[in-house]
Image (cartoon, rainbow, N blue to C red):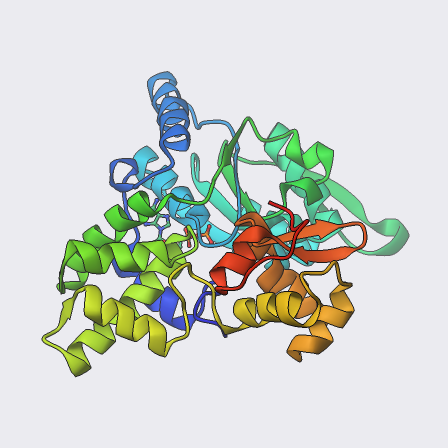
Length: 334
Ligand code: ADP
C-alpha cells in the first residue's frame, strides 16, 4: 500500500481509537459542517427527539466515521457500526434494525455499496420506522410488519452520486466534507503529538501538513513515520530535519506526490512532450495498470492542477513542468 493512500489500513485503525476526536469541539477545520451539525443536534436535543437521518459525503480519510461517532457522543446514545458491503441480504439488515435501541445511531459506512433489496428495506425503515419480516418461503411466505423505535441513520459515502434518489431523499441533512487546508492539518497534528506524547516543532508539523494531501488520515500516518525516524535517528523530536528525512525515505515529496505520481508526470512531460496522451499508453509508460493510474494517482494530480483531462487524453499543466524543474513548451495549459 502507498503511504499516501487515503484509505485506512490496519495500523491506522490501531491508532484511530487514540487519535479520533470525541466531541464536535475537538474537530479541527470543516467550520461549515461543524456549524450545521451543531445546529441540527442542538435542535433535536431541545425537541427531545432523535435528529433527522444524516449523510456524510466526501473523499476517504476526511472524517466521516469520526463525525458519525461524534454525533452519537453528542446525543449521548449508543452507536451501531456496519457497512454497505457487509449488508448483502435484506435479512442481515433486518437483524440489525430489529435490535436497535430507541434513539440509537446506526452508522452505515460505504452506504452506496449496499445490496438492492437491503437498500429498499433501509429507506422504508428510515421513513416509517418499520420493517417487513418475511416468514416462510415460496408462495406461503408472509410479511409480518415489525415496528421499530425511532433511530438515526448516519450514512457515509465517497460517491453520493451513486446513491439511488429514494435513499438519498431520506436524509434530512448532508454534510459535505472537503479537503483540509494545511493550517487545519497542522492543528490536528499538534493535538495528536500531545496525545502520542511526542515533542514537536512548528516547522516539523508544518512540513508534514504540507505533504499530507489535505487528508487527516494521511497526515496522521506521515506523523507516525516521522516519529519513528526521530526516535531512531534523533532525539525523538518531530522537527523539520526529521520530517524532511523521513518523508524523503518514504518517497513523499514537498507537495505530497509519491513515486507513482512523479513517474506519471515524468512520463507525460519527458516521453510525450506534455501530452495529450491516452490513459493506457501513459499506464504502459509507467509500468502500471490503467486502472491504478486512473484511480490512485490521477484524482490528486487533477485536483491539484498538475494534470488536465482533455477529450484527447491526459496533458501536463504548467505546474507539472515546474514541479519537475523542466521548461514547459509553448501552448502548455495553465
Ligand atoms: P473517513 O471515515 O472519512 O474515511 P475517518 O473519520 O476514519 O475518515 O478519519 C480518518 C482519521 O483522521 C481518523 O483517525 C481521525 O483521527 C482523523 N480525523 C479526521 N477528521 C479529523 C478532524 N476534523 N480533526 C481531527 N482528526 C480528524
